[in-house]
Length: 75
Image 1 (cartoon, helix red, strand yellow):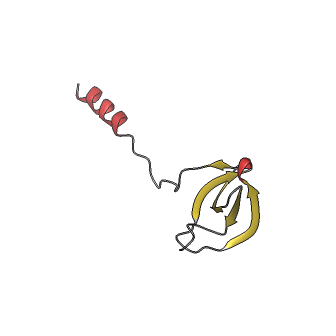
Image 2: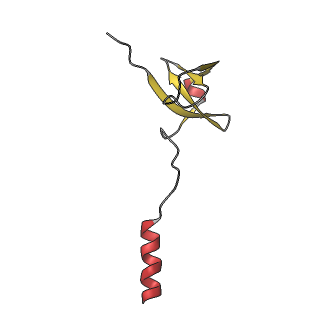
Image 3: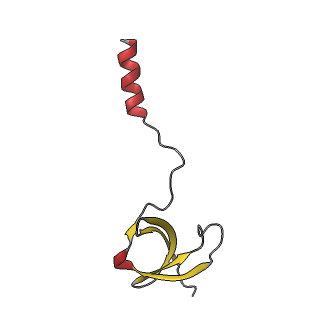
């Protein structure tokens, strides 16, 4: 049976990165896992990282705010 690999996005010392989760540590990757899985050689304890959302959004939409503004302008 194939081993399941768990990829995460995390922050360590304020810097975001991608990593491969092991039992109690994170192996930092050179880039996003969907491009290539190349470890940097640095391993960080899991307790020392802050877990982030899996990917960074390219844009943020404020639909409710825009609707409220339009209603105020219209009247």
